[in-house]
Amino acid sequence: MNSTVDYFNIGELLGEEYLLIRDTIRDFVRSEILPTIDQKAQDHEEIPGLMKKLGSIGALGPFVPNVYGGAGLDYMAYGVIMQELEAGDSAIRSAASVQSSLVMYPIYTFGSEEQKSKYLPMLASGDWIGAFGLTEPNHGSDPSSMETRLVKDGDGYRLHGAKTWITNAPICDLAVVWAKDEEGKVRGVIVERADVGFSTPEIKDKWSLRASRTGELVFDNIYIPSERLLPEVSSMRGPLSCLNSARYGISWGVIGAAIDCYQVALQYALERTQFGKPIAAYQLQQKKLAEMITEITKAQLLSWRLGVLKNENKATPQQISMAKRNNVNMALQVARESRQILGAMGIVGDYPIMRHMMNLESVITYEGTHDVHLLITGQDITGISGF
Ligand code: TGC
Ligand code: FAD
Image (cartoon, rainbow, N blue to C red):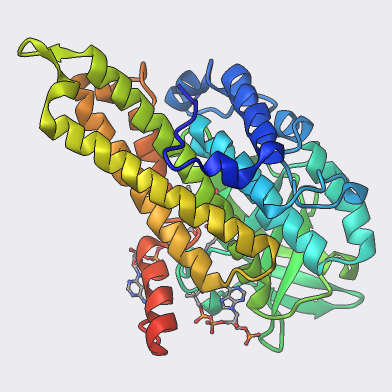
C-alpha cells in the first residue's frame, strides 16, 4: 500500500526537502518494485537491472559527494531513502545499503584518491555491484577472530580464506574484504571479479530475502596489487565503522516494512466482516492495531533523532545499536501481528505481510544479531563486557 503513517507529525520535523525525496523514492517503489516483487521473491530471483535502477534515482551512496558520482545528500536523506525502499522489500533496501554503507562508504572513507575516483562513480551508477566480506564460516558475531589472511608477496599481497553469508556475492563485480595481515592487523582490500582464484558460490533455497542473492566469497591465494589495499585504516574500526552506517540505515528501513504491514492489516480489518461486524470493531484487533502504530511512531522518533545526531557526527555506535535492535524487533512484531489479523489470507502472496515477516527474520540477525546489540547496550551502561 505504501503511503504515510505519521501520527506525530514527523514530516514537520523532516521538512520539505526530505518529504520530496521520500515521495520520489516512494513513486519508484510503486512503479518499479511492487508490480513484480512478490513473484520475484516466490521465484527466488532478483529484480532485473535493480542496481542500475537504484543508481538512476540516487539511492546508491546518497551521502557520497557529487564529485565521486554520489548524490551529495546527508544521513537524514539516506534514512528516508532506506525507509521507502524497505516498504517495497527488505531485499531492495539490502541492495542499496550494502552498496552505499558497506562498499562505497569504506572506499570513500578509507580509500586513496585513485580508488575513490576509479570505483565510486561506477558503484553510484549501479554499473558495478559491490559486496562486503566480513562474516566467515567460523566467525559471525565475533569477526575480530577472522581467519582470512593477507600476506605480503613482492609489490602486492596474497589473500587466502573465505567469507560467507555475503549479500550480492554471486553477482558482485568487486568486494571490499577484511583480512588480517602478518602483524595481525585488520586490513581492507578490494577484490575484483576477474582476480584469479576468486569464486562466489551461491547459498540457495533461503526462506528469507528471496529477492536478494546471497553467497560465499572464496579467495584461493588471490594476488592483490598494493593499490587495492585501503590505506587509511588498519584495525576493526574499519569494518565496524561501515556497520554503523548500515545499521543506521536499517533502523529507518524496517520502519517502512512495518508501515506497509500495518496499513494492510488496518485496511483488511476494516473490510473483513465476522460475526456481523468488521473485525476492526473488536477490541482484541484494535489493541493489535493501536499497539502497532504506537511502536511505529516511537521507532520513527528514534530514527529521526538518530538522523539529527548522525548529521552532526555525534551518533555513537551504541545509540545506533539501540535503534537497530529496537526498530527491527518492532517491525518483526508488527509483521507477525499483522499476519494474524489477516487470518489465512496473511500467508498468501496477494498481501506483502508474510514476505516482510520472512525478510525481517534475516534483518534481525544480520548487521549484528538482536542479542549482540543488547550486549553492546549492556556494556555501554555497565562498563562490563557481557560477550
Ligand atoms: P572491540 O574490542 O569492542 O573493538 C575493536 C576496535 O573497533 C572499535 N569499534 C568500533 N569502531 C567503530 N564503530 C563501532 N561500532 C565499533 N565498535 C568497536 C573499537 O574502538 C576498537 O578500536 P581500536 O582502534 O581500539 O582497535 O571489538 P570486539 O572484537 O570485542 O567486537 C565488538 C562487537 C561484538 C560489538 C563487534 O564485533 C560486532 O558488532 N559484532 C557483530 C558482527 C556484525 O554485525 N557483523 C555484520 C556483518 S555485515 C552484514 O551483516 C551485512 S548484512 C547486509 C545487508 O543489508 O544485506
Ligand atoms: P553466530 O555468531 O554464530 O550467533 C548464533 C547465535 O548466538 C545468535 O543468536 C547470537 O546472538 C548468539 N551469540 C553469539 N555470541 C554471543 C554472545 N557472546 N552472547 C550471547 N549470545 C551470543 N555478513 C557479511 O559480512 N556481509 C554481508 O553482506 C552479509 N549479508 C548477510 C545476508 C543474510 C541474508 C544473512 C542472513 C546474513 C548476512 N551476513 C553478512 C552475515 C551476518 O552478519 C551474520 O549472520 C551475523 O553477524 C551473525 O553471525 P552468525 O550467523 O555466524 O551467528
